[in-house]
Image 1 (spheres, rainbow, N blue to C red):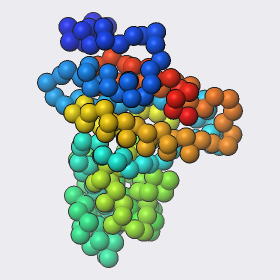
Image 2 (image 1 turned 45 degrees about the vertical axis):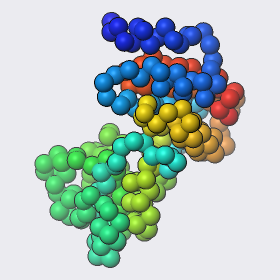
Image 3 (image 1 turned 180 degrees about the vertical axis):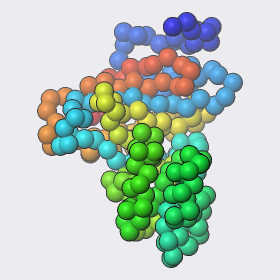
Image 4 (image 1 turned 30 degrees about the horizontal axis):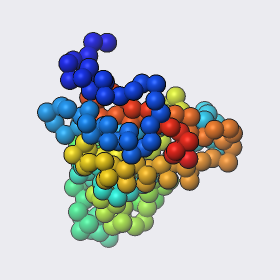
Length: 230
């Protein structure tokens, strides 16, 4: 893959043979994020689990102290007082059958988070094949299937992110923008790592966090010493 001059210049700042401390690695991300837009800083964690086994799944959600730098567009599928509460809390879209139909017939996906109540899961379940591959299917483990829609909407707007394993047993999560600076990025990074460590399955054997890499959208990956994040 051919890289541009900015990437090549940024890559020179990173020692590929070194395992950095988290603070040093995130500081490098702020230096290597040289694009004309405010790049997102992402964390990539390879875990010592096997996602093919139900007892080794790692999934959850965490509210980042400083948010993600992006305001989430929230859709709430609910009825009656729950719908009223969602609207009052600042949800961008609120509905029930009408919203499900809109997604089914128009392939409408102008939202980042979908929250629903337990009584609506029979209806929302029809959207599994559409929402599942996009990681948007509501789940009690991430707080997006709840009776407290006010809290769920507030958390989503405040910078709540979901983390889950992909098929390669890797978690990919944003922890903010380059413009946040090292200190805020480190606070968010620590919040994510704390949540992932607490979610360690009892069935996990051996080293839990095998590798940890941080990178800005257009920048090179910076490897973090796994021993410093467990």
